[in-house]
Image (tube, rainbow, N blue to C red; front, side):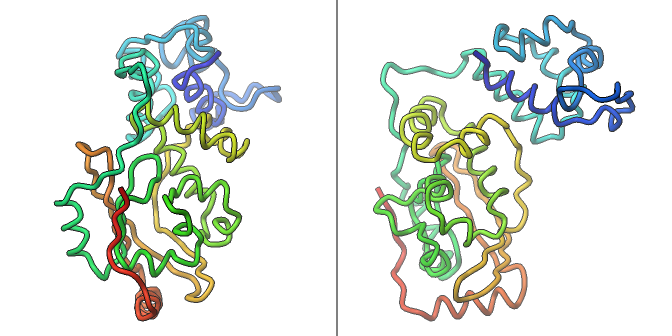
Length: 278
């Protein structure tokens, strides 16, 4: 049985073309990407050790090995951070509990007050699992036709993988899906593993589990929406991390005048006020 660390190293190795690192292609091969021999040589470790690491038979690589693998795979800053995180949880350093704790859904009053100051802008508070915990009227105005807010307890991750309307609404659905799945790795491990193995995976299907095991580190560019009544919207994303709460405050800003005008029209329609879910 593999590990998140081994899966990530193998996925990155498979995605690298040898020529991009100045290595010979070795002709046609059954497996894509970089050979284990080439990666092991670049990282200064044995092929046998790399094999054990990828297969999950070695779960405690040293910091030096993790850094050497990051260098050998030419990882960027975000990917290096993810590799270090996976090494930590694979090594069992995360705190384990007898009973999985439910995700925190309460939003602090100070955060709610901050959200009110952003009215009538487009802003939302979420946790790493994708739960929509509080939102402004502007966020509701933009998202109401997506189906995301129809559920009693809205969850963006579940919506993306189980509601067919999501693929029509989010112009870059593949990228958004990768981002949401990646964030599951950053959630408290006990909460996230219990939730996505017992609740999400059975209904989300293989498209979700495939993305989960690919460990694609997202770039998080513009959010593009194909709004059924407002047309194409381009929104810039600004995220404020709330580490003590394991939550995020996401603010969406119109990227062009056309989007700004469309959002203003959506706001003029009847809508609710700031909502917090607990």
